[in-house]
Length: 389
Image (cartoon, rainbow, N blue to C red; front, side):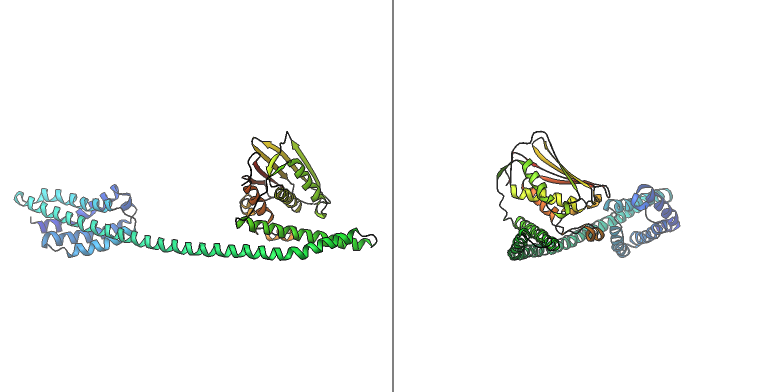
């Protein structure tokens, strides 16, 4: 039997064995539909026949071009397709040995080997070239994306600096008239005479002015920290007295009228080195935040203690609480909880940002533990013996 007759007669047998063995030995081929493998196997086999019987490589070249694109896109490895060509050769060789005249076997086997090797060389070269092109294109796209990100980051940084500068300028301009409003309202409140309603209105003006001034000072402080222009003082501070003074100051505000505020000191508290003015603002804002989100008559508790080389202050409330997914975001500038809470309790989203930045300047940290509807505990810690930067 001639080689062409043999390969045509056993073509279907070869294809069935080819598909079955491919799916056994390769996970990638096992994921492909069987009809797709049969079709690809038929095209490959016909191309091999043209090469073996007529010495025509054109069908193989066309098949390889299509195969490179499909197999590369499907995530096949080079070795898997190489093994498929070897497998086709290994299936054909025993049929030749069994059915061809002895004197023609070696020549026929050489033709089959040459065909398999040609397939492997052509596919490997084109597959690797495609991978190189894909990698080059991906690198170009990545480089372009990185350049876009750099430009966007530079633009964002510039915009952020302009924002901080704008806030600082506006804050400075607002402080002068506000100081006058606060001062004159206090003088008018202290004057003899005048009815109670007028005094109450003056008190509202005074407190709202102080509230606005605190917000402006917070804006200025955040802007200075962001600009790297902050200068921390280095004071020897009795932190018990500092916290106690913050508690007394907060009790003067209307927001604290219906709340109990307790302050507990645990153990021996040594003198610490810190910026007393800014730490006072931290404690004041922590208290204000807890009072703001607490219901009337609810208690706010402060607990000061030494934790190894750390000074730790906890501010505990029985307020609305915070969902766990909000823990990191609440320390971002201008971030507030959902609209309904914001409308009910007010706020500008700056207090917690300022607290975090000041504590970090003291090489410390701030954390929150909370459950929605069950209150919150804010904990600030910083080294006692480390001088702030």
